[in-house]
Length: 373
Image (cartoon, rainbow, N blue to C red; front, side, top):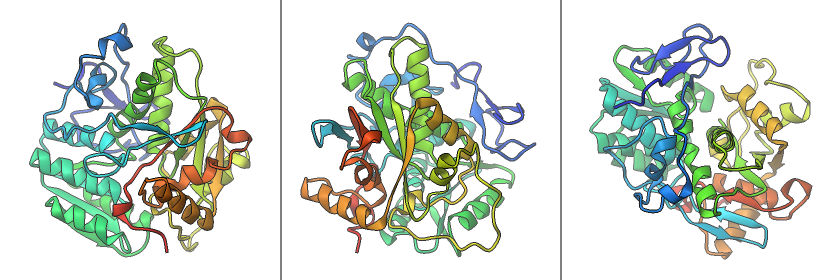
């Protein structure tokens, strides 16, 4: 059953909708939904030891308390890289990326709602993940991707039985095509951006850190940011753990973007609360970190606010440092795709922003896209 008292609400204008509806965005402002959900109280670390070794061990903190389609996602290793920086190996997921944390939530919700079909859009990893979990759930699935998406990722999407639609143009054109399809009757939009169930899946990343570190969190969490789903999930978990009295201090959020596509970093350092209006005709820049090459993330205002509230900052990395970081991690035994190395590229040389203990996520396997040229 769906958790009691869960309902979509718009953080901009307060519009509300039942989660049983297939309305994928706020009908008033067309913005993303948030979820009216509060985790159960009275659950401490001692209650977790005998539970299933997947992200579903945190069922008391989730808006869905179980999944009939789990692939064993979650509980990835935490490995030290230096005396102060550790890496969480989220590329060791069933579909080889952290997106499984949120995709299992979306697919399980869709399974319970029973739509005619599921639609998703992605630069690759979210699409492969949604395709896999829809296959597990027996749900028809269509995934929209930009032209130029890694052939390994499109091959994986097709292998899971999803219909693949390649959209001319960049990430924004792909999102618009998927959203047009999502407006059709009987369609569940498995959007890792607009549907807050995805964020409640990614927040388990931090619950795992909290458990593995003995009831505390590091001084800082470095997170790659395109649409911001991992960062917002992390911020959500930190807020919940603090409200539940399970942590005393909150970590800084270090948001990392590729220098070539860094709209949020630019806005943050300019002191802005949101992105400026879009400029028509501006060509999309290219970066090796394709998974975070998002020029206009729909949750931009929330991302900027979350980083500021944590006392954190934005860092950007140029293309040569992304290449170097991928090679450096490979030399240490970690074969990670170019987007997944961005945080290591940002913090490996230290600096004031990375002071204290820091955890970086290695988000996607190198097999997804290969080594950077």
